Image (spheres, rainbow, N blue to C red):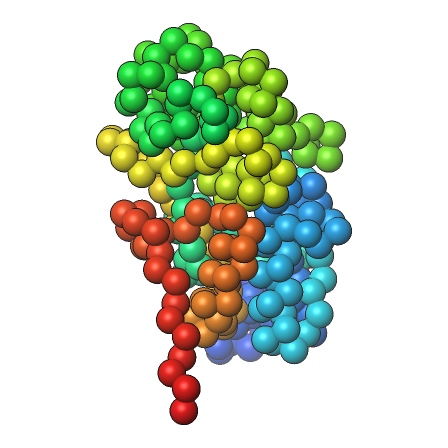
Length: 279
């Protein structure tokens, strides 16, 4: 129906880019966000996720309220939310994902290894550390670290956890950390924006260390963008401007949540912005 509507409008007008017609789908009376209602610490229906806080920040800059369309982030998420026109932006999309049109990235992060602070693994910062051989490692099935674990011959000792699941009824990351604390596994491999905040907020006996030294593919460092519908270049440019003008405040939200953030190349921690000089 959407394609048909665009074609009809083009036929009647006989002028103007198709992108302008697509951009009309954006509702500028609200900042309409597609999000998972139970994907803590990223997004939550009670507004406690750090992606919620970033959405509130940007909506405030636009002078409009945030309006959510909630849907579990499983297969069909984009089709049933963004592409259906029920919302206008998805927070936290990896750069290069073909399901959406990516904005400029607003942070860069990596996967982390989480262990107990009192463990002999507490200073491990690479999967190639020989101390990990023979250890029970929690791995999100299908996530990038799983390929590195398999390449290093450690998959036989790994404990798999689900990647795509309805987090209203299952909590793979929370279960992984609970198993780590209970001694059922020796280490946990998680996406940093999940593992970092969870450890900071509720697991004082654990430590999350960024994995920045792994050679080869797949990469463990990703630039994170916002996703909009294909063709909505004007809306994308507006979001890019918002990101650029409010990057310091976005960084502050991420750091406060416990998200590990790095320079654009994932080579080192992103420096904290210096305060503006007093006039």
